[in-house]
Image 1 (cartoon, helix red, strand yellow):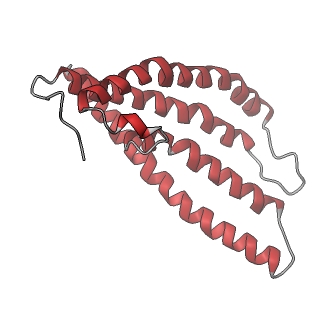
Image 2: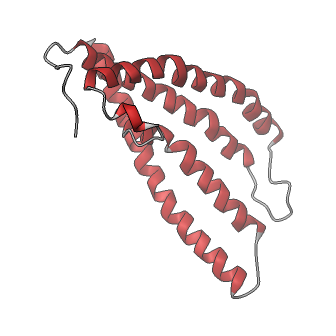
Image 3: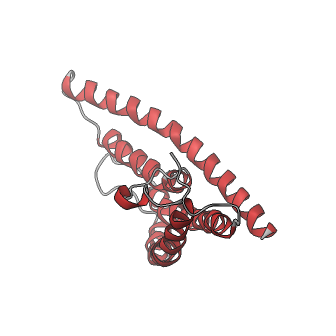
Length: 177
């Protein structure tokens, strides 16, 4: 269990760093969108590269912040029943959800995106639009990277769930506020 504890701590630290780095992209995205809106509506000019940069940044933010969001338990979930469960029942739900849904889905995305990304790198994929951004393969590479980070975070979730489940002092009736 000591190795799992150290591994979970390393994973949490990694995803915290990635998440905190990606947070800064949101500021860049806001500035770029403001620039795009001003040039489009005040000066009646628009650039394909700026529009593509907007959705590239959004994709990086969404993909690379997924594990960070999962780490902080801010992901989308139906909390109707979950919030009323005791910490041990929540830990069981998290453990089974991670083992039977999160890990398999992450593996499917990683495996199925691998060739997609490899082909994009091999051909040096760029934007098909005139004036678009080069190196689209970098954006596509974020897909397996993001799900590798999510897969790693699932190990930390399993560790935390097992810690809660195996804790003999945790009472079944406890609930977090």
